[in-house]
Image (cartoon, rainbow, N blue to C red; front, side, top):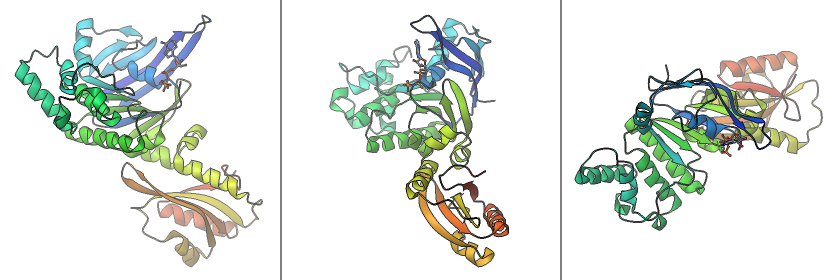
Amino acid sequence: MGIIELQHVKVDFPDQKGQTVQAVNDVSLSIEKGSIFGIVGFSGAGKSTLVRTINLLQRPTAGSIRVNGIDFVKDGQQVISGKKLQLARRKIGMIFQHFNLLNEITVIENVAFALKHANLKDQEVEEKCLKLLDLVDLRDKANFYPSQLSGGQQQRVAIARALANEPDILISDEATSALDPQNTQQILALLKRLKEELNLTIVLITHEMAAIKKICDEVVLMQHGEVVEQGSLREVVLHPQNELTQSFVGGSREVINTLKSLHLDKLGANEAIYQLVYSMANVTKTIIIDLYREIGVETSMLYGNVELLNDEPIGTLLVLVKGDSTKQEETRRFLTAEKVAVTRLNEKGKLYD
Ligand SMILES: Nc1ncnc2c1ncn2[C@@H]1O[C@H](COP(=O)(O)OP(=O)(O)OP(=O)(O)O)[C@@H](O)[C@H]1O
C-alpha cells in the first residue's frame, strides 16, 4: 500500500454560468513511500486541484483519500476529525512557484514560523532552524531578508520551512517554474538529495517534462482532469502510449519533428524507418555496424540523441533500414533481443500500420 492512496477522486467546481467544471475526474493513484512521483500536464489539467486533495486543502466531491495509513476521506465524506487533520497536515510539507515567504522577517524567522505550534524553547527553535538552513546550504543567509536572496535561494528557504515539522511527504507545486535553468537544476538536485537523506516522499507537479526526467521515479500525465498515462519514468518515456505523452516526451517529439523536416519521399517496398530507444548501459554493441554484419542490412542514421533519465543515459536513434520483409523482420528481432525498444514509423513520423 502506498503512503498516499487516492481512489476515484473527483473535484467539481461550479463555473460562472452555473455549470460544473470537472477539475479532477475519477483519478486513482498509489504513491510509494520514498519515491519521487511526478504529475505533468498542461495548464488547467487539474494537477494543483488533485494534489490539494492530498492534505484536504481541497475537499473532493467524491472518492477516497488515505495518507500515511490514515483515512482522510471515504466515498466523498471526511472521516478524520479537524484536530487530527491539523496534525496530519504538519507531516505534509508544501512548496510553491512563488515561494510564499514573509518579506518583512528574516530567513531564519521564516523557517521558525513553521514551528510556532511545536512547543519548543527559543534556543531549540534557533538550533533546529540553523540545522534546516544547513540542509539547504543557506546557513550563512540566516539573517538576510528574502528580498536580498535570489529566486533559487528563496525557494531553498521555502524548502527549509516546509521541512521544519519533519514531514514524510513534500508536495512541490511548480516549485521551479519561476526559476532560471541553473536554479531549476539546483532545486531539483536538492529535492533528490533530500528525498534520499530524509526518506521523503515527493509529489512533484510540473508542466516541464525536463524536470520529471531529471528526478522522478514514477510519472502520471493529466489532461482535462484525468490521468491519461501512468507508469515508471522509463516506461512512460521509452514507450509512451498516448499521443499527448509523445508530444511531451522530448526524444520522440524530436524524432517526429526531424522526420517532418526531412520531407522524405514515400518509402520504397524494401525500406523501413525505426525509432530505436535504449539504455546505454544495456546496449554494448555498435548497433548499426552489427546490423550490417549480422543481418546484412544497410542502415542510415537520420537522427541521434542521448539524454539522462533520472541519471541513466538513454539513447534515441532514428534509422532507415534497407532490406526485404524477411530482413526487416530479422532486424526487429535482433534489436529487440538487444533490449532496444523498436517503433516502426512512416515517413511522416506517424506509427506505421
Ligand atoms: N476554485 C476554483 N473554482 C472554479 N474552478 C476552478 C477552481 N480551481 C481550479 N478550477 C478549474 O479547474 C481546472 C483545473 O485547474 P488546476 O489549477 O487544478 O489545473 P493545473 O493543471 O494545476 O493548472 P495550472 O498549472 O495552470 O495551475 C481549471 O479548469 C480551473 O479553471
